Image (cartoon, rainbow, N blue to C red; front, side, top):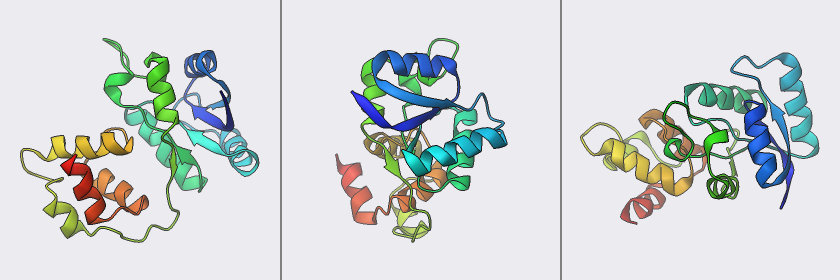
Length: 176
């Protein structure tokens, strides 16, 4: 299997694991400080082949993902759940199984650059995804169905709107 887009990862271990599973090219960010050169390289890759951002399911990984998405619109995003990418002491793409990596890469999506609110904050609250005892479990259920990692309440709200999902769409996901 050859992936056309260039996959943005955090380090060489991520590259090694991905390239042992699939035929792909990567760009490594080397941590949360994105250099000007790395951003230029990602921008050029986005123009020519496309980019899939596949960072670790932790805070630094989200920081990198957010920075790239803000500076380079149109990038595809792939998420892997934290419990599928961790050892007893570490979390990272390099710790995931081949099956989980391929699954995550088969569910990529691109955020809309100027999202139009498809679900209001009031509708979102009515779904029980913010506050209350079951909110975290409900958010996790929606996030797993959409391969969004494990976002907090505000981040999930933002991502649902970026993906242009409606109240009805999210209700359907919660029923499953």
